[in-house]
Amino acid sequence: MTPEAERYLEKAQQCLSNARAELAISLSNDAGRNAYLAAFHAAQAFIFERTGNVAKTHRGVHSEFARLAKDEPNIDKSFPVFLTQAYNLKAVADYETGPGSFVPPERAATAIETAGRFIECITRVLTSSA
Image (cartoon, rainbow, N blue to C red; front, top):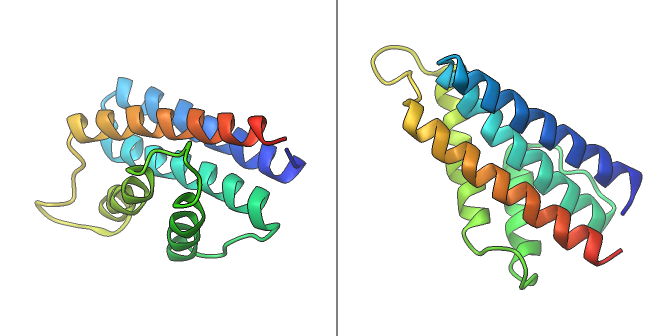
C-alpha cells in the first residue's frame, strides 16, 4: 500500500474515533459529519491506490469510488450508495438551519457502524492487493 493511501486510512480511523466520542457525549451532528468523513477518507485511499490520483471534490470522490468499486468483488455494493447518502449528514450538520438541521442520534450511530465496516473493508482490500 502506498504511503498516501495509508495516510488516508489513518485519517479515516481518526474521523471514526472522533465520531464515536462525539456520539457518546450527544453531539450527533458532529458524529454524523465525522462518520461520513471517515468513509470519505477511506474512499480516497482506495481511489489513490487504484489510480494514483486524488479526487478534489466530494462529488468526485463519490463518482470515482463508485466507478472503481463496481469492479472490486470484495467491496460491499452498498458502500458507494452509503458514501453518497452519508454526505447528507455532513450537509445537515454544516449547512442546514431550522427544524431539519439536526442529525438524529440513531442515524449517526448507524452511520458510524457502517463507516467502520467501510474502513475495515477498504483496509482489507488494499492490504490483500499489496
